[in-house]
Length: 98
Image (tube, rainbow, N blue to C red; front, side):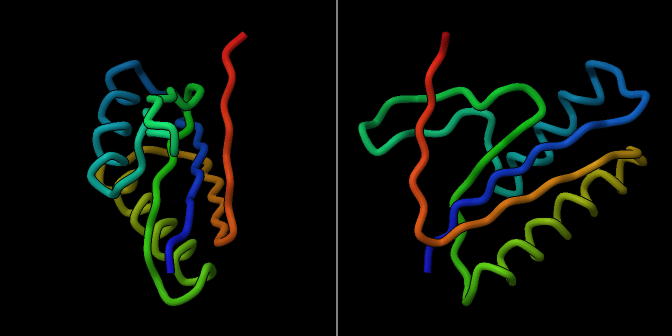
């Protein structure tokens, strides 16, 4: 089944280069700063957040697997961080810029 995962994070005492590295690592996992809507529009996720679509047996295992991958990626760079992951199966999302 397909699940939508949203991740927001905060790096403590981090530089702009640290954030660039974090976004690069998250993209490798499948969490992007820019997602494409069902209408094929590219939508930029607000700062310090990323999202992606993942497949798995159930929502809890997808959430835990993505969380572990994010934690490991940040630990490999020795980032001190706060990570919040939300995953859902029957999902819809929308975005708007003001």
